[in-house]
Each structure stands twice: as structure tokens, then as C-alpha cells.
Length: 166
Ligand SMILES: Nc1ncnc2c1ncn2[C@@H]1O[C@H](COP(=O)(O)OP(=O)(O)O)[C@@H](O)[C@H]1O
Ligand SMILES: [Mg+2]
Image (cartoon, rainbow, N blue to C red):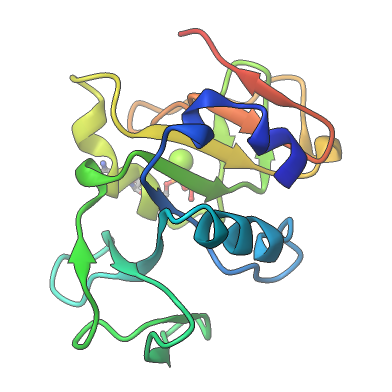
């Protein structure tokens, strides 16, 4: 997946990149995180917003970031001690996928967290780029898109990085 990202301008030119720590069979991001840091770019991780229910915020991540475990048992930067930046100020957000189709529809874990957090992108376009990360075998023919679903800009798998036109 790192090799596929490296070919994309959305990755090469991004300064602030939101990633995720691999959890429960999701495609591995550890090499990607190392590469982003090595290039001198800023890495951010999603954190459940304690006040805005169902929303994510993004906190700066490096080797020294204090972490805590959220209510899903997922490790995330400590909300109270981190440098927090909202989604609209990211250049690239990498989202874990359960499944995707060739149109850029994404199926997540069913919580709608990214959809809620990225709802501001429905009327405006462009920033941030949204890269869905998955194994190629997670592609399905056609996913139903609900009104609240935010489509992806890119699909990046172990086999390809593909820009979606919509
Ligand atoms: N922008 C939004 N405003 C309100 N509710 C939302 C929004 N986005 C998603 N949801 C809710 O989140 C739930 C899960 O969304 P879904 O798209 O099925 O999950 P996922 O994207 O994780 O696969 C839906 O039932 C939907 O009502
Ligand atoms: Mg959705």
C-alpha cells in the first residue's frame, strides 16, 4: 500500500495526513506512518470527540504522543493532552474500509463516524482528499450509497491507487 501511495500527488504534496492505527484485520498502516514521518510531514490520528457525539477530531501523532484506549478498545491519542486539528484542515485523510466499490462508495464499521465528521464536504469539494485504504479483495461490485455517505477521492489498495471521478 505504501508503494501505491508513493505514486500519488495527493500523498506527495500533503503536509498534514490523517491515518489510523491498524485494528481488527484492517490493512496495515505502520509503514505508511513511518514513511509520512520520514518525509517530515505531520501525522494525525482520529479521536472520538468527547463532546460532539459521533464525531471525530484529529490529534497530532509521533513517538511521544500520550495515548489512551477509547470505548471501542482502540488506542487513540489522549484528547486532553494532544494538539487537536479538525478534519477541514487536513490535506489528506486515509480511511479504513470494510468494503468499497469502483465508484468510491465506502462501507465502514457502521458507526458513521467519518460520514458525520466529513459532512461539511458535501457542499464544498476539494480539501481534504479522502483515500480509502483496503485490500484489493475488499472490492465489491456496487454498494448502496445513502444520502449521508461521503464518497472517496481515492482508493488505495495493496495492488493499486486509483483516483475516482465524481
Ligand atoms: N452526517 C450525518 N448526520 C447524522 N447521522 C449520520 C450522518 N452520517 C452518518 N450518520 C448515521 O450513522 C449511521 C451509520 O452510517 P453508515 O454510513 O451506515 O456507517 P459507515 O459509514 O461506518 O459504514 C447511519 O445510521 C446514519 O444515520
Ligand atoms: Mg457510511
